[in-house]
Length: 284
Image 1 (cartoon, helix red, strand yellow):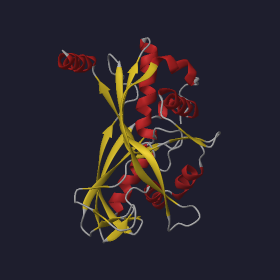
Image 2 (tube, helix red, strand yellow):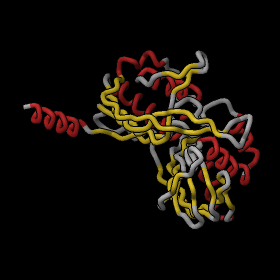
Image 3 (cartoon, one colour):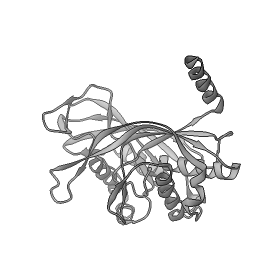
Image 4 (cartoon, rainbow, N blue to C red):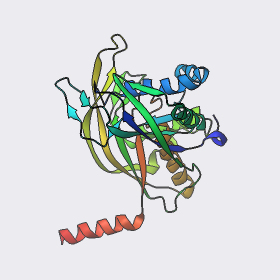
């Protein structure tokens, strides 16, 4: 995929449940498997190719959200879902074929299995993004992490602490793999700093590769991280593109399990000034 083929699309998919079941709602790999199943039922060749690919996954997705109140069960990470519950999940992608698969899946009335839960996809709202629509006065950006996220270094086999440098490492690697630009992250280190961080730890779950009936718990962070962006218009616009693309491909390099689903929020300069003045008045 090249820069010309990047087509950012946000899909809000509404559904209703067809049965009652106990489901681990925060199990990332379970929903990933369900999404692969959607693609496989429409185009098994494409599903196989994307599953075996070692490059950037062309999507990022939220977990299931319900309009009805769901109850926790005695089993850790599991929730009790009733028949007839309605909800939605969000899938963001840079590959329009995935959106077409969703539409066809809904048109056929196929039933999606998420663990023991059967859900009927009802419709999808699609919002067109724009990779080149760079906002004016890019001074700050907030990333809202919406699924538990951690940063794991495959070379050192260790979890890394969040920093602007770590974030740039992941995003620059994706840019290289997608053929957009070949830039070393060190070139951008001086231009991005964490300004404020309002995050908390949250449990997420993965299905065990050995025993598919068991889940492995992990701790990730969710919440808001606000960055200060420096440099010329070139550096600032490039960093904006790096962060913007993370909405549609996940905050990490390969986020096939759903880690790092996020939303990018532009913070206007005057809003920061207003906040700074308010804090100054409190101090006075």
